[in-house]
Length: 114
Length: 110
Image 1: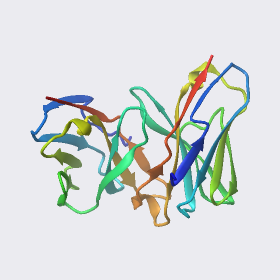
Image 2 (image 1 turned 90 degrees about the horizontal axis):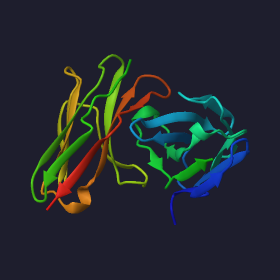
Image 3 (image 1 turned 90 degrees about the vertical axis):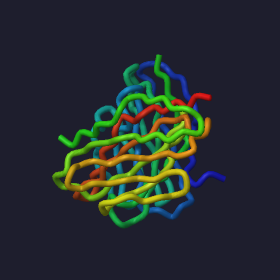
C-alpha cells in the first residue's frame, strides 16, 4: 500500500462546484503539504501544515482552503471551482527536522474543471 | 527572488552519461534536493546535498558548490527508464523554504 494516498485520482467537474481532495498518510509524519503542478510552471505550494493545529498559506492559496483532521489526514477544498484551477494536485509529507527533510509525494489528483 | 535555473529539455543516448545543471540564489541557502518525476507520476527523492562536493549513489551522483550557487545531477549508463523530468529544489532558511525548479525533461534515445 502507498505511504501517501490521494483520492480521487481523477476528477472532472463544472465551474462553481465545491470539490474536496483528500490525502492520508501512514508514514507518521507531522508535516503535510498540498501542491499544484501546471505544465511549464513546476510545483507550487498551496498550503502546508506542521501539525494538527498548524495551517499555513503557501504561494498560491487564494481560492483554496484546507483542513487537517488528524495527523494522518490533510484535505484540500476548492469552494467554487474555476477553470484555471485545472491542474495536477499533489499531497506530500515530510518528517520533522526542517526543510532539509525529503518530501514524500502521493500519486496525484488530476483535476479538470469545465 | 529565489529562482532556480535549469535547462528545460535534454536528450541523451542509452548507455551514455548526462549532466543536468542547476543554478540558484545563494542567500539564505540550506541545501539542494534532486527529484525524479516520470510523466504524470509523483516526484521521487533522489538526493540532498548540503556540503560542497560530489555524492554518489549508484548510477546517479549529485554535486554542489555553495559559493557558486551551482549543482548538477550526473546520470551514468543511461537506461530508457531514466527518461523523466528532473527537479532541482532549493532548501532555504526558515520554517518552510523550498523552491522548486521547473524541471529538466530528459529523453533517452536508443
